[in-house]
Image 1 (cartoon, helix red, strand yellow):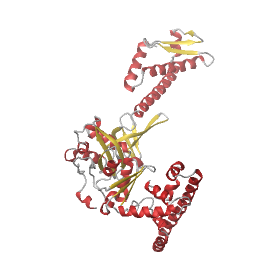
Image 2: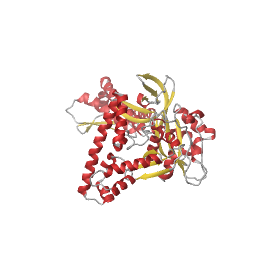
Image 3: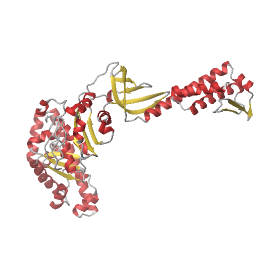
Image 4: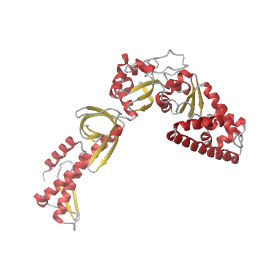
Length: 468
């Protein structure tokens, strides 16, 4: 075997397949070893080494070096076919590992390719070296693809499937929006503007909170672009999905109102024990803050990382009175302790059932036994209320008219139970707003910062959506 020919083959494979030379040398050694075993059998100890500089192979049989003429006999026509098959297999495995490692490093990164075919809802995308799979569940609702379409997605997962590498793509993952911001907005890719938080409901709406290390740059205006050009490119890539750009602030008292824009917030009450924020708005701002089917407040909660409950001042006052009365009926809970619990955001039996005993003891100066008894009663009451809610929902489904009459009677007798049955004790005003108005895309105003408000409308929004 010519050493120069071996080196030429190794260089060609390394250049064309992007496979490390050492892996190719190992494959050739394994191929020669297989041919030698075919010649000598399994009764001899065989070793193969290839000089990395000259490319000359050396075969040892029972620790004795074989002459070159014997080596040529070993690599005869039949043995050479075996060696070739082993070598091809090793190269394919090395190529698969190389592709796997390459795309594994690209996880959560953006890639683009062309649609090669559509099979059962899944879209196969030619990425160059390999085909990626865009499952139906990772496609934006309502979009469709045809062969030849150019598609951009992120690498969601990379798996080895036998001799192949399977690359799973996604267009619904929140990082898809992040990568598009880096692509379309130079300040984001240069890390001058930082995407601090992101919440998305693919195909419908996203909220992106941004901040800037340079105070002279308007981070919201830079993301929107001149006449909305930058954000329009992102919206078009996401099949018309609306994007709210929110000005980030480390203070929740500022960030929460920003995240609920364009609704006007009157007050923000933090409840650290439950990780909950109570937001007070005027009656006319309630549907706007909640959004269609609760979408606005739901995305705002994901954006800030706290549960947000939106209500009016009248609803809060009524809630406080009913909850204090309900908690005071629990043995061992005084009116002062009930008021302390309510001030910390505990508005339902379920909230009280999950409180830590040491927190309850600290609030009310109770013993461990008293705390356990209160939690036990709250847990039992929570299960009772949940069972009543299930029964009420079932009754509404089977007999809507009768269920309405029962609900009205229940409201007149036990106010606290009916309040929970309507889901207003635990999630005030959110569940009832299934038909709330849709909110147009806008940038957020940094409340209380002393700065001029920034109001940039998403140019893709039709002005009539403000009146929905």
